[in-house]
Amino acid sequence: GAVVSQHPSWVICKSGTSVKIECRSLDFQATTMFWYRQFPKQSLMLMATSNEGSKATYEQGVEKDKFLINHASLTLSTLTVTSAHPEDSSFYICSARRSSNQPQHFGDGTRLSIL
Amino acid sequence: AQTVTQSQPEMSVQEAETVTLSCTYDTSESDYYLFWYKQPPSRQMILVIRQEAYKQQNATENRFSVNFQKAAKSFSLKISDSQLGDAAMYFCAYRRGSGNTPLVFGKGTRLSVIA
Image 1 (cartoon, rainbow over the protein chains, first blue to last red):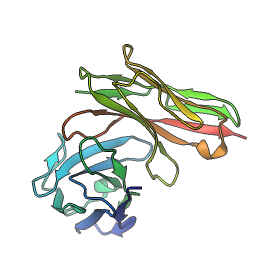
Image 2 (cartoon, one colour):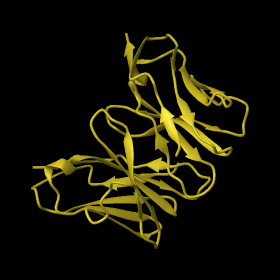
Image 3 (cartoon, rainbow over the protein chains, first blue to last red):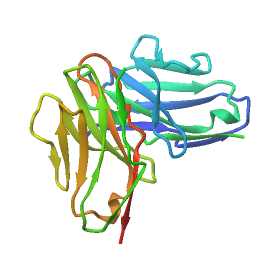
Image 4 (cartoon, rainbow over the protein chains, first blue to last red):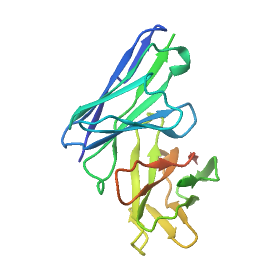
């Protein structure tokens, strides 16, 4: 089946640093990748939709300069949290899809803790 | 905008019994998909079952089945012969059938299974 790999699974860093999270589709080419954020005991909130070779589309309220998304190839998308602060601590999940009529496959998520 | 509502924040079921999780959605589209995802404590998102709106027949996957009522915009999940491993958060999700659209999630229902 389709596999999406997300790395790292857990990261702890100091306030003010930037953190990059990678999302890879291992056995298929993903024309579209999605980034979600999940607070404890809450649902997944869509942050942005990323298409290969074009700029990401951000949801309302998500700062594009804070959460940089790059989808440089059909198998890799990255989310960079710039100048991270404690309020950015959360669980981030990526998801990838081969085409619009195909299922969305999820990575295992990244737990980000900013001290 | 499409919305997904799960009115049961928490549910519990005795092992080997049957439980039904509720989900309603709001859309003006005629072509769409509905999903149930399971998120265990590991926080991995696991697809449980999927339903195409154009199909009248309710989807089933082993012990999992749905009751899809299109006119009422209702999509409930029935888990039969509940097992301890079924304990998890369950999210109902909607996706428009056409275009590059993401999954939209409900707030989730936490299911406990009592031995």
